[in-house]
Length: 312
Image 1 (cartoon, rainbow, N blue to C red):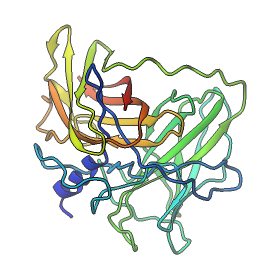
Image 2: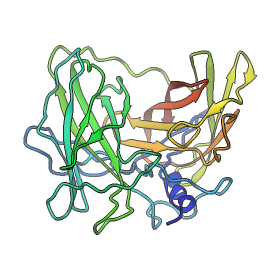
Image 3: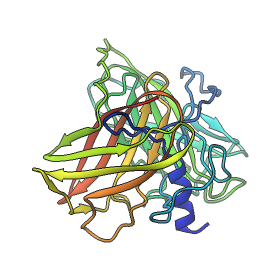
Image 4: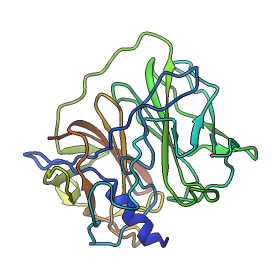
């Protein structure tokens, strides 16, 4: 599949959100929890996202064809540890609170062996995400892999509570070569967990002096455009820089089950002058609130804007 075609699939994994203020919503397909390692509690699945087609790129200006279930769309949302014979395994069911600690894991294939050959997607062979049950503490990491297929993620210090960890990858060989997966597992961080209420719904967020505003119409079951506009001190931002081969990375987590959607804009990368607007295509999935983390870079600095968006 060509890079352009591969990205088009990713866009379909988007979930559209909008509200009176013009909100965006990312959706994930509901999945029943799959089997997990004995040391972990059951979790729902995330893979490639309810359509997270990590690293794929859609043709600029072109909306994805078809609807839910369209051929080529990714339907994983990180709520299961296993799909199509591929499995995320880890000997770690806990990590200590308040200090950095490594998280080892492997991806096993249908033959039961650790997978060691992964396609590079968005400049990386595996993307790793972490979020606490109250949708705080978001981390997007890029682990290292040993020759035997053991990956090591090094998250920043985690607060006490229940966490979900996700691995997004694409096998480069085997029966599902070229297919995007997002698998997830739960993790406990011992200690007294102070739950943080989900912030109020809103379509605008300011971080490091940059304001990102989301606009779009909520249409259940239909793919549609979502626009994110960037400004600084009331002036358009036109110096967005590529980060992992895209001008932005949007991760959204559904309140309640932590289903994940990960999206990239269809706006092509043309150097260090992206903006002020980026276009996504979203497909509405689950109703309810989503916590959204939008990562973008300017002047060599990575920013993460956070929103709470509602999908009706």
